[in-house]
Image 1 (cartoon, rainbow, N blue to C red):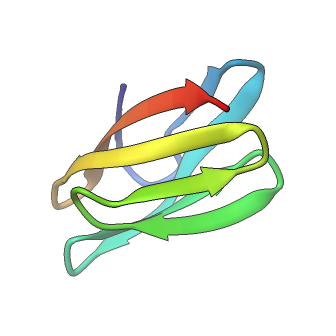
Image 2 (spheres, rainbow, N blue to C red):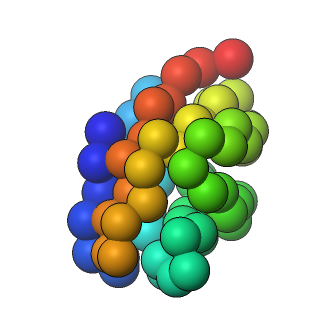
Length: 68
């Protein structure tokens, strides 16, 4: 999935994911009630979801989201 623009939001596996900020190649995201951060190629976990940041643009992030 791709999110573009600060505040953009999507719901995946009944969990809201939104962009808090994108800067210096790093995306700060809210996943449900948790805040996480990632760079391209990094995997992070939040609750029952695993996220892989595939690409981070100037105001976007491309993610693969899966359930654990």
